[in-house]
Amino acid sequence: MSEVISTDVAIVGAGPVGLFAVFELGLLDIKCHLIDILPKPGGQCAELYPEKPIYDIPGFPIISGQELVDNLMKQIRPFGPKFHLNEIVDRLEIAGTAEHPLFRVGTDNDKVIEAKALFIAAGGGSFQPKKPPLAGLDAYENTSVFYSVRKMEHFRGRRVVVVGGGDSALDWVLNLHPVASRVTLIHRRDAFRAAPHSVNAMRALVGAGKMDFVLGQVTALKGADGQLSALTVRREDGEVYDLACDDMLPFFGLTMKLGPIAHWGLNLHENLIPTDTEKFETSVPGIFAVGDINTYPGKLKLILCGFHEAALAAQRAFHYVYPDKKLTFQYTTSSTSLQRKLGVS
Amino acid sequence: MTKVTFIDAAGQSRTVEGQVGSTVMETALRNSVPGIEAECGGACACATCHVYVSPEWTEVVGKPSQMEEDMLDFAFEVRPNSRLSCQIKVSEALDGLIVTTPGKQG
Ligand SMILES: Cc1cc2nc3c(=O)[nH]c(=O)nc-3n(C[C@H](O)[C@H](O)[C@H](O)COP(=O)(O)OP(=O)(O)OC[C@H]3O[C@@H](n4cnc5c(N)ncnc54)[C@H](O)[C@@H]3O)c2cc1C
Ligand code: FES
Image 1 (cartoon, chains in turn orange, yellow):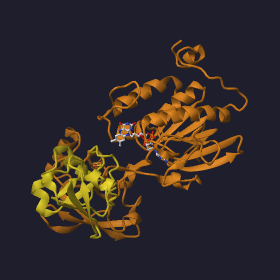
Image 2 (cartoon, rainbow over the protein chains, first blue to last red):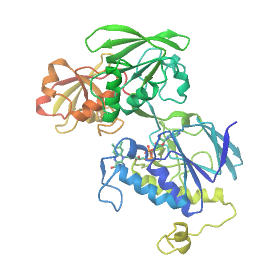
Image 3 (cartoon, protein in one colour):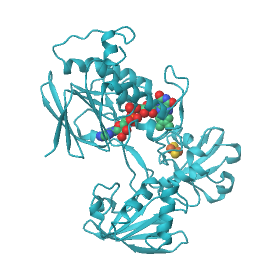
Image 4 (cartoon, rainbow over the protein chains, first blue to last red):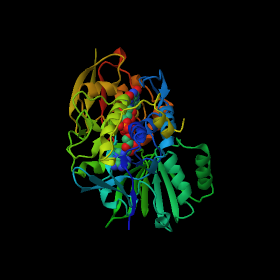
């Protein structure tokens, strides 16, 4: 049975806009749960350009992607948002009525979050593992080819090939080495973009004959019925040969894919969700789309635009969460009630 | 103005004008040349702007920087003439440059 969590608003995506939505909703006494497939909050800012400067955040002449995320996390802390990281929202069920809708989003970790309004802050889509262009790859996914490790036990006693040269590849080589019958690391060059201690640990294992390192690239898969039997490898020296194996874990980084949102019955325009510009609500009442994922005449994919959208969408979401209450507009500077929520008065 | 030719994985060739100072990636996007995704917008953070520099140009174009070489680990079917097109600046010296785009970027 799935675990069911009840809250006011579920936010799909913990990028800068999803994070700021927590703030705007929090000022209105609305509690939030956020779900992101990344292991950390911050979306593109944290994943693609944490060190790069941003020059167009109002009031910050210069701030790096990660600093902005850190600041947002600090800003929303008083509202105690709950994060479900490393999880993708893969399904949506709409219940209730148009006036009092109820949304149930399900994650691949078997959680169900039930909310009175739904914010889609999915940006450029969910960050998903890049799949190498190998013929027949799909047929082996989740049985013999894995982009992440959920169950270590699966690999017990198996011949595992890890492909890549980053931290994920090295970490899994080291973690799986005691479990698998044999681990082989395949990488295109003899240099790694990973923590030096992991690289040293890997080299030590290779030196001791406890695992193998192959300088080369995988060019084809062999096997049947979802079970790999070998990989065809082209070695750096030009030799092409078959390497017997049971499982392959390719780590080529992440790419943004719209993903499951495409199947939720929302109107889509070139992979974007059209909204109005008054409340940023979608074709389904109670579902809002904010940030890079939405589109409307004049839309700019800027963080500051997403922040504005979140503020207006929160006003409308209030009516779904508190249908009988009236909303009065207040400033954080002068409202003691807002300041109490922020924990500063 | 300098010319850049993009050949896609199927062999179709497109020659477009590139502005000196802009990148080969930007030149592709500005001219709607398919085969380059550039998800990170040129931050050298996605490797979805991977190209193969045609052999007669590799020397002029030069080798990737350390950061680019690291990022190439996230590209597929990397070859000695692989480069990330967001890291190549169009210049007079590169007038006539020919690059091939791979079958799959991301
Ligand atoms: C290199 C670069 C430089 C940039 N510079 C600037 C700049 O200077 N100024 C500026 O304003 N903007 C800039 N941007 C754009 C800015 O980063 C985006 O506008 C901003 O990140 C959008 O925020 P978001 O919260 O809407 O989406 P994102 O940051 O894309 O976050 C969306 C999150 O949702 C998650 N997600 C999506 N679907 C699901 C699902 N089904 N389940 C679970 N999780 C899901 C994703 O994993 C992701 O983490 C830049 C972008 C790049 C790439
Ligand atoms: S555009 Fe992302 S690395 Fe070149």
